Image (tube, rainbow, N blue to C red):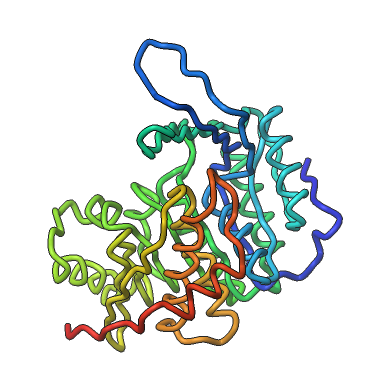
Length: 324
């Protein structure tokens, strides 16, 4: 049975899909050592997984958003409760196996961060079909769907192409941020792809060591019709944007890093919000860079602050055009 928040018929502008949500647990310790017991501080619990993270930041930025996700077991109940507590409308699909947990430990002595990510529950074909049905219902009046995160065990690699087909049927744009088979089995119809350099390398099976090689790979995705635009996130080096009209290099905004968790999802959220505001992709990606930087300022899996994102956006440099 599907259950939803009291605001399920909210009519969101943006709908997110998270096929492999997680209960994100974050804590800190003085030292992380093998074999020894590691005494940790009190844990922080957040609803996580790519699309849920995107929804949280879209909400922070003032966007109208709804989240679709499958959950099961006590961890799934807690994820649902946390999404509701964040005042995000949602549609959940109940599944038999329990939702996964992700665990992050920040080592105070070094500033290093250790992240442990589990594979997630196995979804049956019936549960997968229910997820697509709920997405179709939630997105019927939306402008953009954001499908973000890994595919859990049991879900075929072409699942996101089925999401593309639903979005095409509804006349809705799709922003896709995924990796592995979920990325490699997209054949057409995406509005915006947001791979990291590592994900782009895995997709093409090439090293892509230079900027020109990375941009060439991104342009291959555009020229083949897989996506109208590709944003390649470069971490501390910023991002590249490839479109049929041209390409740009975006510099990162340096900030004091507290935690790197969720910066990529924050970037996707802000780009999507920018597009719904009628901004150009050029401006939207610059907003994404700024919001990703704002996310680095927050502890653990806590969402960034809107005022930080807007302040950094004012400081973010304009992109540089790159010839093909």
